[in-house]
Length: 481
Image (cartoon, rainbow, N blue to C red; front, side, top):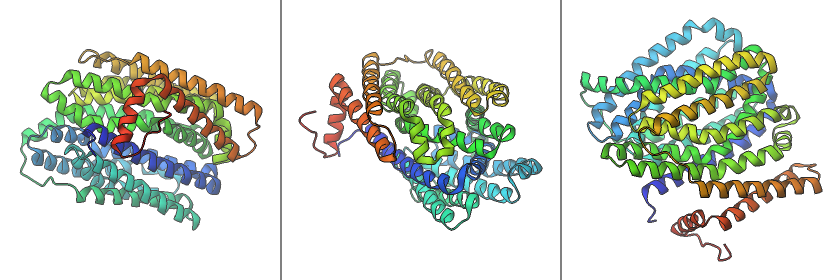
């Protein structure tokens, strides 16, 4: 199609992210209406435990393998070393899981350990295949595997819930999707086993140590709030909090796509000494991430209560305040995720850890202080402060290596368009009572149209880039735009 690799792979990543997230939203609406808050909360706790023990099983070597493989030298040797280490660390994670068996069984009921162990084993296969193709630069394949993973998961979960399997059906669908994604990536993996040496292990370990510590920080403030809400409160509260958090992920579509696409590119540019390319790409990534994150946050602040009520059920409208706070978190995430990604890609995982490690300590401290005091709103506030700390520290370290800047003109145009959208939607809401889901959806559509038109009319640069991309895809661009 004549699209440069970064744009093409970002587009593939964005399309797959949007597709699977939309499918996930629709499925989750079904799950919450059928199962209720408590059952969905139990599934959210399973995901939290899987995330923590899968981190132990990865040990940071996944990110290290992607880094070394993407550099283009001795790919097979690094891949094989990673495979061996991943299997060894699986034993460590399962051992840790068994040691905590009484605590986990008391929290979630009998049988959860079998599903967790099975998920961790399949996670090794999926992780090795996925990191392998990602390191080879096959970002589209990696995203395709993620898309298949989620689609299979969602389909089987819907069927299982319909048949009455409840939380067990959600867990089983998750594991099946994980396996399907691994099979897909494996078919495109061209790396092969090769003899490796201590040097390869040392090079992986040096990098993975800081990746592991940095990833630990991310996992902590991704799942600590879930586990601590479950500890201090109820599964129903976990369900409300997780639904609010999941809803905000719509704001992170572009950030996720660009973060996935740019990591191997920045890694290669750094190896070749193209620091200016990295700075320019990062600044543009900020802009295109904010194009989506800002209007989603503003729209959520205006319509959040109605969206939760009609989409997920009356019980989940309790999370309106949490939703408002977490939407702001997703705006901050634009800077946190892209800056920590860049630090890792330019071989600065230690500084990335300093940022995420400090934020993790802040997160746990605030969770322990605020959740018993003000409940799930306290967890949301803790997450917001955590992301601000993480983003600020990451920017400090990254700015020592490359120029880090925000495109002021486009950012102001984004804020102007989002403000105009808010005024129009508030007027709509004042004139038309939002008494059913169709009127709410109409408000969402109206807001999206107003935002898009204002942005395209005020920012010529964004207008021209989007027009050129659409033209490269073979889609006619309206003349009135």
